[in-house]
Length: 180
Image 1 (cartoon, rainbow, N blue to C red):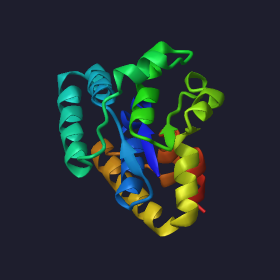
Image 2 (image 1 turned 180 degrees about the vertical axis):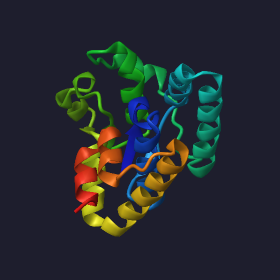
Image 3 (image 1 turned 45 degrees about the vertical axis):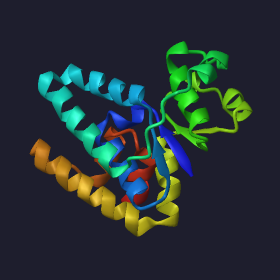
Image 4 (image 1 turned 180 degrees about the horizontal axis):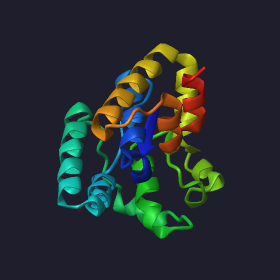
């Protein structure tokens, strides 16, 4: 399965680490465009110059790990597409150009299912996608979550629980499943 990762699911660190961890296990092939990656770097700028620099380093690593993930949105495809938020058309165009199966996003209202269906695509939120992957590979996803939790605790100096961290990362279903 090819999955276009919208900026809103790769900018938050925990969500990104969980998604890319599942991709490393072979559960899906990630897809993005240069514009999606640039949006990630610009969003990280809100954290200051160090935030953007960190994002650019992580982007470089992602590009090394998935050298075939980048698909520029084809201009001729973009011109024929419509979405409620025109700023998201490039994400849909990337999905069409890459022959993706799904767009992973938390912005459901910006990607109406009927429009995606016309292009042979579906929309999934990261929590339901990861929960479904957990159901088929609980050990793999638990290992990823355990590593993400350890790094979050190290960086924050706090003692997060797995469930609380996943809930904060907008992955509550996954967090609940991992805590049972």
